[in-house]
Length: 407
Image (cartoon, rainbow, N blue to C red; front, side, top):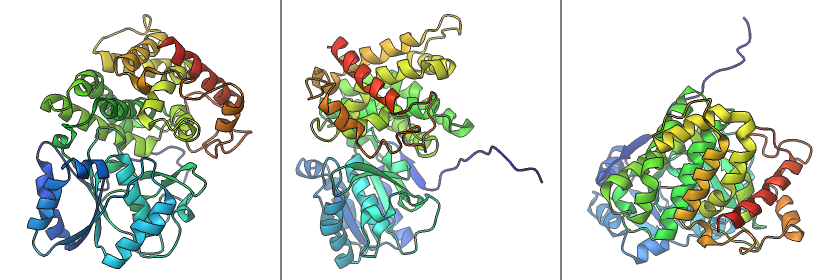
């Protein structure tokens, strides 16, 4: 029998609820699954603001359910915090399930707890573990309730966690895909402008990069394009007022659809470059970094995916630009204008955040995410244009130039 060279990977291995008020199904889920001991992992700012109160009310009303609260969530989840604080709490409580309510950092913290499970292993022991290879111990199931329309972590099997040296690394495994995800746009209503802008830009970048990734297939492209349609229309009015039901719902769906694609097709060079941008000397929010890098990456990739960029541009603008009339610079300009409108990175240039073409550039290039100097870094990603170390150096320099033009 001839070897099959290409095959589609698609499907959704979880139960999803999306729409206003869908958080109300939580007690039904717990009863159906027999989960009686819940570890609530919650964003501390949201807890202080009272956003978590409706979730606690549902837990308290649920029959035979007990819960504990863990809210020491770092903006970039740390393996050491998970291992020394969150895991011991889960073990002592004998949790049946993790309920993560918050943004990507909260859900990724839950994923770090989940993958270690009932063992005394270290989180980073599972870095590089094949995504479909069984984990030889019990892991914790997760119910994810996102409070931003950004990371898509609730519907993908990836987690970004800092190792003990402070480097952001990616865990990827089927076992940390949340068993349930409740995407309730009502939780988005109180997002401050900078957070709404940064997380929405992250979702937009996921949609665009997963669409142009060489691993994309019919399933992922369908969701990527629909995400681009929804986000392209909703992103500006949503950031201006996340309490408007229409825009919140569109962004919630757009983020989810981009997350489907991200989990299968993966991302692009933008997300590689943004890893060191969350560390010294920048400490830039991830979504802001995505927006800052994106114009340079689109310009670079244009040689390899011009037609896909045309379709993406038509999806986000609702235009019908023909192949002969489209120029990649049109998409570059659209992204640059979006950065200005959303005040991405606080309207500051890369240099304002601490970048220079000397020692800081070299510090970025030493990040473990650039893991092979002789080949395309992060080889699990298939970029539309081959991008080696010298090319990433060029892209970082170009990002700096774009960031100055946009201010």
